[in-house]
Length: 57
Image (tube, rainbow, N blue to C red; front, side):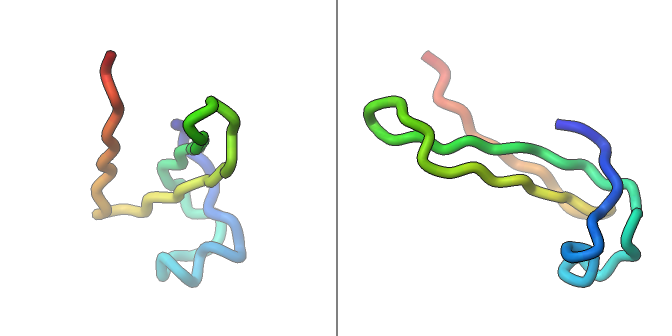
């Protein structure tokens, strides 16, 4: 997680100005064999809630 400037292509989706500081989180998704199958970057603007679940073993 980090604080980043909101990219121009994402700003309209969050109804914020490009360059607005927002919380950003990188996500990796993997299959049953442990191979990464997808990568995503989330941007959370002001007033939005971050929720994440982790399998604790």
